[in-house]
Length: 95
Image 1 (cartoon, helix red, strand yellow):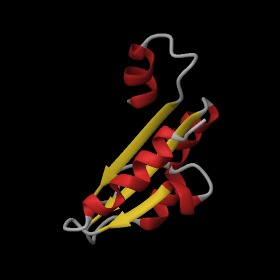
Image 2 (image 1 turned 90 degrees about the vertical axis):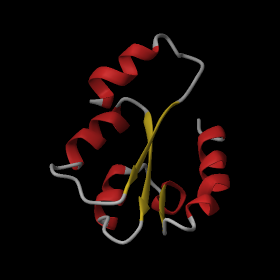
Image 3 (image 1 turned 120 degrees about the horizontal axis):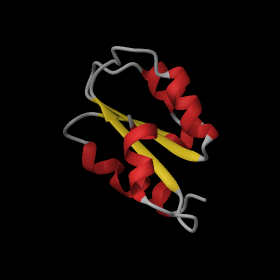
């Protein structure tokens, strides 16, 4: 959906990076590998955030841009605000 409906509607953004942040507390109902790969091929920076207990860390890693240490976050609901600064740094510092 992001590739087909969201990104095309943003208009010409040649000077800006396309960044997608996925925040989830569960597992996907479908395969994330190929859609994520297509977005990365389009130079979209994927950042994954798992919240709570029931997300799949392997899905988060599959979606996110490498290196995982910079683009995958896992946090409890009560500590969600602790990743805001790191997310801001990744988003604002993205090329």
